[in-house]
Amino acid sequence: MTQSVEITLSERLLDAALFHVPFDGWGDDAFRAACADLNIDESLARLHCPNGALDLAILSHKRGDQAMVDRLAAQDLRQLRFRDKIAAAVRARLEVLEDKEIIRRATTVFALPQNLKRGGDLIWGTSDLIWTTLGDTSDDYNWYSKRTILSGVYSATLLYWLGDQSDGHADTWDFLDRRIDNVMQFEKTKAKLRENQGLMRLLAGPRALLSRLQAPSPTLNDRPGTWSPTTKD
Image (tube, rainbow, N blue to C red):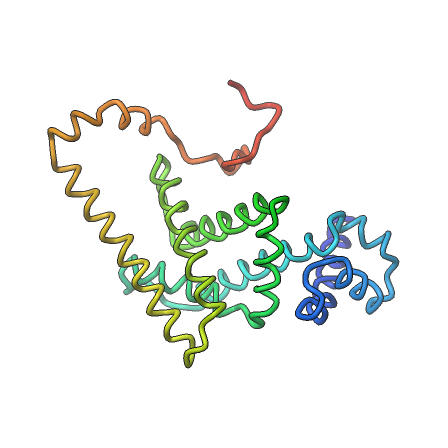
């Protein structure tokens, strides 16, 4: 019961804050204005959002992630090549963003030194969600490499999108296609290298180490960058 109340209040605060963020940014002014709009005592609001507007910015990003999943679920992607599925997912994630100024303000906040890890976690989470939604079943080092590469593609495309004034963001979608084409060229190069027996023997040691990497267990919550006191060395 308590959890549902917290989620509802946080969502209400976010909806109220979105009217103020384009002018005040994701800071105390926007948070206080949202509390005033809802006639909620700020001390009560901070019980649910200890970091104030920063928590609302994080919630806003996760709301966008869920909107992307919903949009992808409504599309039939079965006939698309996998690279086109990735492009469709990144495009869907950007198309659910309605106000560039809100996103620009969030980008500024997450670029601050004290918030870099939070921002990186959100981008990684989006990339992970895209791969998971598209049915990725990798459970070795490829799990990490796929999400690392996609995080770079998504981040670069997002920044390009923020400055894009072309009709229907056509320039952004062209930029996205070029970034994915670069990744595909890299994958083709990797495949050719694997055919080189001499090089594979030379890299036997590093490959053996990489083979020990496993995808994190969702049941143990051992996502990259997360440490648990129960983790054994």
